[in-house]
Length: 367
Image (tube, rainbow, N blue to C red; front, side):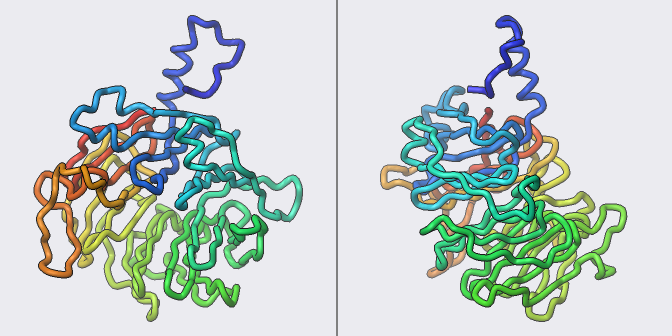
């Protein structure tokens, strides 16, 4: 199930070789299947492993349930980013994006459906694709990475329709403002740029490192993560993790976290972040650190919230409704409100930590 062992490695040393691979493994990306029962994880060796969340979360789960049901070689280099639609899994590596059918993956028929390469400036250019973003209303996929551009691909035709230019260095992350539709991008140049997709132009720029309260020169100016919720944005990296009001381009909350953050997301009335260090951080919007929950990896690069509803037969761990009528249900007590609704975290190890509530790591999946 691991990457093919070179022929030069004697049979007796293969287990050692595979153990060394796992020791030096980094998991860059995650994506949940449309049914919510499976998790795809991509590593630095170009492999994608598929885990059965439903089996691992079952009351009858065994250690084998925490291993991949299938592992396949997706790219020659690292799998930097993945996203899923109701039918497809998209994965990005060095200079290319590939599509896979979920139904075929789960049958262990892991043959790519198609492969596309953005129109780069020269044939010798093979920049990494660090971020993928689905735009459902436009039926399009946006790719961004080492060539400092955002490439839009029409998923109906498979053609690239536009390239958005403005960043002067690598792009690390993307986020979607769905109702507009607009896209936020953050990069090594220290800027967060807001793009209007219909006008195909940049409409706002926030140079985070130029704000004294956010700047941390010893960490650099790069933006490694961002997320948006309507008129609000949270971003971090070299500069401090900061909550911004987008309309006024104003930083409203500086979170007291010195370690650079690599992933951030809004979850109900919280912000979840992870990066340098083993913990998933839970923040109040006011800036108060509510909790730090340790995982098994020394550093984290990816968080994934599986918010698919439970199957009718799933009766494990129903939560209390914590907000009254019309309010969303939240994690409460020691159980998750759905047996499939979990947070997973991965990074600089061969393990994917599974949190069945926000308070502790329940167990880890492993390549």
